Amino acid sequence: MGLSSTSNSFDSFYSPTRGKIAKDDVFSQIAQTISSSLGPFEVIVGADSQLKSRGTYFALVISVIRPGHGGTFFYHKFQEHHYPSLQQRIFQEAMYAVGLATEVREYLRDRQYDTPVRLHFDIGTKGPTRKFIQSLLALAETNHFRAEIKPNSFCASTIADRFTR
Image 1 (cartoon, rainbow, N blue to C red):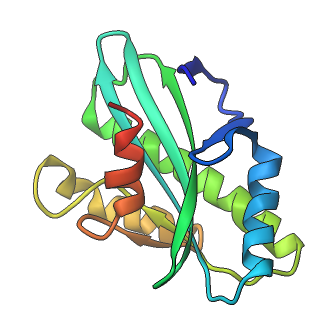
Image 2: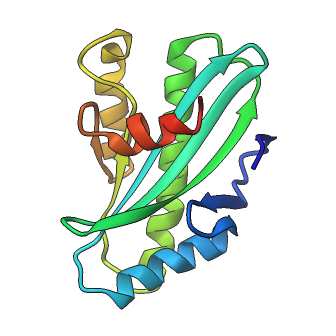
C-alpha cells in the first residue's frame, strides 16, 4: 500500500474492507451498491495533498453514502514532484477530483443510474485557501458538479487528509 508515482491514470484504488482494487472494479462496486439497496445514494469525490521533503503527496477519495445509513469509500494515493505553491497544489487537487468525478458520473450515466456525483474541496473561508473559493466553485459549476467546502467537505478534509499524512 505504498505510494507510487503516477501518470494520472489512477488504475487502482484501495478499499478499507477489500484491499487493493482495480478502478473498473471500484466503479462496478459503486454501481452494484446503488442498485442493490434502497436509495438515495450520493457519490462524493474529494482530494487532498501534503507537501513533504520528497514531493507532493496526493490522495483521491470516492465516497458512496446512503444518508442516514453510512457508506464506504475507496482511495488512491500517489506522489508527484514538488508543488511549492499552495495555489498550484490546491488547483491540482481540484483538477484530479473533477477528472475522477467526471469518470464516475459517465460510468453511472452509461448504466442508467441517476445518482448525483458531488465534489469536496479542501478549502474554506478561514485561512489561506479562502482566496481560491470562487475559482474552485466556478470550476465545479463549469463541469456541472455541486461542490462543498470546509466545514462540509469531509471527503477531502477528513478522509483524503488521512491518507496524505
